[in-house]
Amino acid sequence: MLTSRQIGLLSQIKKEAIRLDWNVAFGGKSAGNNHLSRVNKIAKHLFDNEGGDEFCVLAGAWSHDVSLAFGSDYDSKFVEEHTREFLDRFNDLSKNEIATILQCATGHENGKGNLPLEAKIVHDADVVDKSGMLGVIRHIWKMTNMLEKRILVGQADLAILVAHLESRKLNLFTETAKKLVSKLGASKDVFVQDNNFSLEMLTLISKLSMEGKTSDYIAEWLILKYDHKSLNGLCNQLSCNYLDS
Image 1 (cartoon, helix red, strand yellow):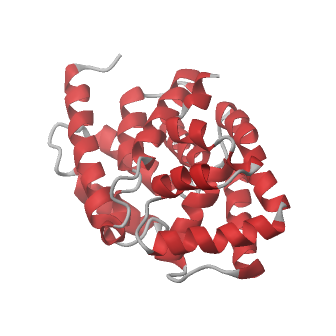
Image 2 (cartoon, one colour; image 1 turned 60 degrees about the vertical axis):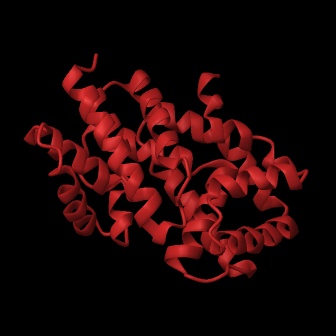
Image 3 (cartoon, one colour; image 1 turned 90 degrees about the vertical axis):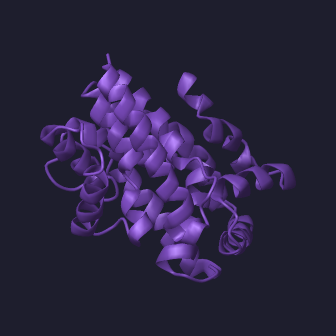
């Protein structure tokens, strides 16, 4: 059970992490997205099933994308430097808590290194939120606004997208996350199998991403505008209702 100190710290960390994610990362283009909130819900679900230190899991889930506000979340040294600066703002954190939360941040993208259970859970929670059709939308958004910095088009860009999603799925640690990703992955498979639709959506989603529409907005817009089997589970992904089942 969380202590009053931990509850207070989580409230502070959440507030500042969301501020950075919405107002600073990607020049404010991602303002209003609910990725951090969803990752926390997923991380709590994984904690309930896998164990670990609840406070470090949740603090790590709120903090895992802090380095995006400074330009990248891929290089582990870069991530550690900027996440440590972020955590140093919170005087009540212990050295052991900071060390574990840092591992949650540095390991969340590539899942490499000798990670504690808490970091494995945050890594897996991030992968779960980047699975299924929501994962397709989220990575097109990231490719457009950070990795490629252009509108995506054609088979080559689609292949890069699919390869990334598949590689992340292969690096899951927890059995709970593996089951969730297996269930969510069906919608991504339907998307990929319909090549004409996937190529059309690749460029459409990329254009909306470049215009500054968030991945959440794009997902909700697609649900209203298109009738395609790959979109059937998007509502449940946005709300995390699939965790209840």
